[in-house]
Structures are given as C-alpha cells and as structure tokens.
Image 1 (cartoon, rainbow, N blue to C red):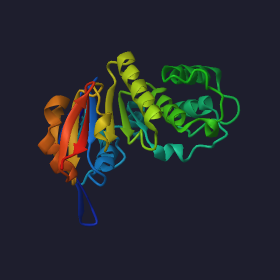
Image 2: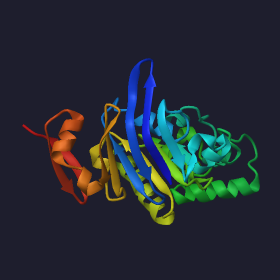
Image 3: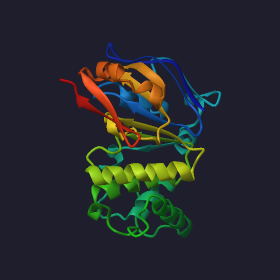
Image 4: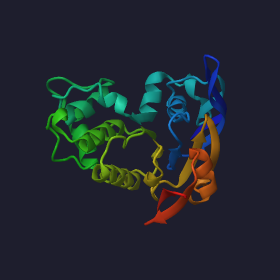
Amino acid sequence: MLELKHVGVSRRGRTLLADINWLVERGSAWAVLGPNGAGKTTLLEVIGGELHPSSGTVVWEGTPLFRIPLAERRRKIAWVSSALGSRLYPGDSPVEIVAGALFAATTLYGRVPEKAARQAEEALAGVGLASRLHVPYGELSLGEQKKVLLARALVRAPELLVLDEATEGLDFAAREAFLAALRDLRSAHPSLAIVFVTHRLEELGAIFDSVLLLGNGRIRAQGPRGDVLREEVLADLFGAPLELRWWNDRPYAVPRA
C-alpha cells in the first residue's frame, strides 16, 4: 500500500533519515520503536505526506505520494498526535471535535449537522466513549481526550492510521485502555493499516504483527515482532545493557547488571 524507497531527509546539513526502505501493507499493524531523537516523528511526517524527503521516493499504491492531492492524502492517512489536542478548545464537546474532521476543521461551533453528528457519535462509541459524547473536552481525563483524538482520526474512514507517541503522559490504566481500544479497532477494521510510534518497549503487544527499530535516522531492524525484538539488538538501539523478558505476550526490559 505505502512504500518508502531509499528515503533520506536532511536539514541544515544534518541527516535526519538515511536510506529508509519500508513497505506498509493494507491491514498490517506496525510498531516503530526507537529512543528519543531517533527520527521517528520525521519518518511519520514523510509517510503522512507532511514532509517531502530530500532523496528517495514515497509511493502509495503505485502513485508517488506527493502527486496525490492534499485533500485526498488527508482522507487516506489519519493522524493521532498530542499536537492537535493542544489546539482544541476545552469547552467543545467530543461530538463537535470529531465532526470537525469531516469538514477539515479543528472543531465545529454551534449546531453540528445531523449526519455529521451521527457519524461522530458512532466513531466515539467505537472507542468506548458513548457515554461522554457531550462532556466538555477539558473535563475529560487525559485518557478520554486521547480517545477523542482517535475517534476524530477514524471518522473519515482512513486507510492508514498513524499514531505519534499517542500514549505519552497516560498513567498505567489509561494507557492499557487506549491499547485495548486499538486492539478492538483492528478487529473491527481488518483492512486498516496502523503505524504506532513509541519509545516504550512494553507497549508492543500482540496487536502489532511487525516492528521497525529506528536509531539515529536509520533502520536497525524490521520484520515480524518475534524476530525483531532481540536482546542484543535492543541493547544496541537504546545504548544500555538490558535483559529482554516476556509476559502475557508483551515484551519488557530490565537493566542488566
């Protein structure tokens, strides 16, 4: 579906990404793991069509991504990031915020058209917020706010969902609830491709069938989750000796003495 071929990004003489080759297929769920400063957000900006690479090509089903009109790219590729959340008005309801995506607006003020309201309500119910449709955004918990952003991304039925550090700032319970919502989402929309960026190894549960490890702007490893998550590779990626362990099909690391 989406393929990067020898993609590189340089800014002011600094290499942010180098020789990235990566294929995201329809229905796949990728986790992109790497330390802070690895180039993860830059990679997302490229696959989201927000940043043109300095070299290489990005192709969507045979068509160069940047030849696809912006409005069509934004329909195909949806984002969840904290940046949007910081721009939302605390007094707006989840329905207004989610319906806004249908009109390429941050939110809708006043009366929401009936069809748009119905679509927004369905998207919110799909992430477990059916009882919070009209609660002011600022009164929701951080975990609920993240789910509003997830519903907003989904309401236009995208083909690729990109999540940039979407669990950042969440406590344990809220993080697990968000990951559970993602798992349910994948079951409900099997053709949807997901790219989930994180620096937290323990978030890479069975929902993700593939993992890409990114360090210093380069791919360190990519492929099936069980093949990629190896102790020596992760220790090199994070620059610290560690012991890789698994519990309930979830990986986690402990420091190695």
